[in-house]
Image 1 (spheres, one colour):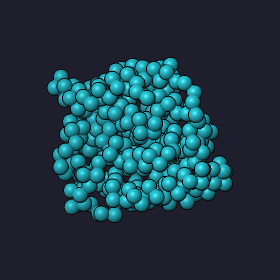
Image 2 (cartoon, one colour; image 1 turned 30 degrees about the vertical axis):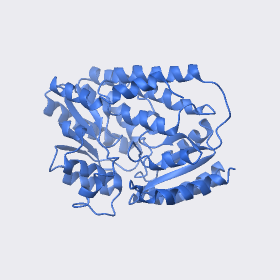
Image 3 (tube, rainbow, N blue to C red; image 1 turned 60 degrees about the vertical axis):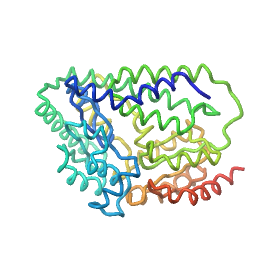
Image 4 (cartoon, one colour; image 1 turned 135 degrees about the vertical axis):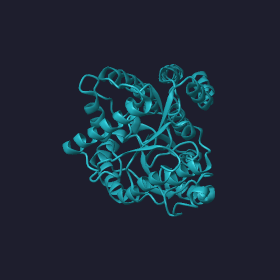
Amino acid sequence: MSYAGLDRFNEVTDRNVLALQEAKAAGKKVVGQYCIYSPLELVLAADAIPVSLCGTKNDSIAPAETMLPRSLCPLIKSSFGFALQDSCPYLAASDLVVADTTCDGKKKMYELLGRYKPVMLLQLPQIQDCDARAYWRGQYVRLKERLEKDFGVDITPEKLKDAIRLCNRLRLALKEVLDLAQLDPAPLTGMQCMSICFRASFMPDYEQAIAMLKDIAAEVRAAYVPAEKDAVRVLVTGVPTGMGSHKVVQLLEECGARVVCMDNCSCHKKVRLLIDEETDPLTALAERYLDTPCSVMSPNPYRYSILKQLVEEFGAHAVVDLTWQGCQTYDVESFSLKKFVREELDIPFLQVVTDYSPADTEQLKVRIEAFLEMFR
C-alpha cells in the first residue's frame, strides 16, 4: 500500500545531502558519528549537525582492502573505503568525526582514519556497571570540551537539556512508526522500516524529521484495515543494517516472511530508552547511552532481556541473527543467543553469516526458504 506521508518523506530525504550542504554554507558545523554510543545531544548543544557515517555500501570495500585485511568485517571496510575514495558526502562535510572504541577492528581503523579527518576517540568501557557509567560520563566531558574548543561555543546545561528534549521527541516519533509493526498484519514492510530509519539518520532538521515521522504514523494507523495475518513474523537481531546492506532483510521478505522488528543499532536500539530530562544532563546521557546492548559488552545481559520483550511485543514467530563475516563478538555471542531463543523463548532461530556482496544471494535464499518451510 502507498502512503502519501511516506512518499513525501522519501522526497524530502532524497535531498538530505543538499540540505546538509546548504546548512554548511550557512555556517553550521557537522559532526560525523560511527556508533550510537556517541551522543547526538552534545553535538546539537554545540549548534552543530550530527550525521551517521557507518558504511553500508559494497562498492567502497575493494579500495579499503588495499590497506585493511580482507577478513575484516564489511561495515568497517565500507566505512574506511569512503574515506579513501572521498565518496561519502556526509564524511566529506564532517568538521569532526566522533568514534567509539567498540570492537578491535573499528578502533584500529579509526587510527588510520585520522590521516584523513580530525577524529575524537571515545574510550568505551566494555562493562555496564556504576564505575563504567562514571568513567563514560568523563569521556562525554572530554567530548564537550573538544566541541567547545573546535567550534568556539559554550555548551551550557540549559542547551544540553534542550537537546535532550529534542532527541527524546525524535526517538518517540521514530518509535511510533516502528511500533506499527506490532499490528498483525504489519502495515509496513521491514524494508520500509529500515529505509525510514536509514533516511532519518541523515536529516539535518530534527523538527522536520519529527513532524514527518508523526505524519507517517498517523496516516498508516488511520488507513489500517485488519486483514489476513502475517504468515511468518520474523525478528532480525544482530549487526547494523542499512540501505546497501539490506540483502538478508530483503531476502526474508521475498521468501514470504514479514520482518516486524530489527533489534539492531540501525533501528530499535535507537529508540529503546529515553533520557532523563530533569537530572544532570551529562550523567543522564552517560547512563542511557552506555546501557546500549552491544556484543562488545562483557557480559551483555540486556540483549537477552530486551530480545524477549521485543519478541512478545511484536508477536515474532522466529529470530534471525544477522552476523557480518569477520564480526567476532556477534559471531561468538550467537551461540548463547541460539540457546536462549530456542530454550527460553521456544521459537525457531537461524544465524546468517554474510557480507555486503551479492555473491551468496542464491545460497542464502535456499537457506531462508528451508528455514521458513517449517512454518508451512
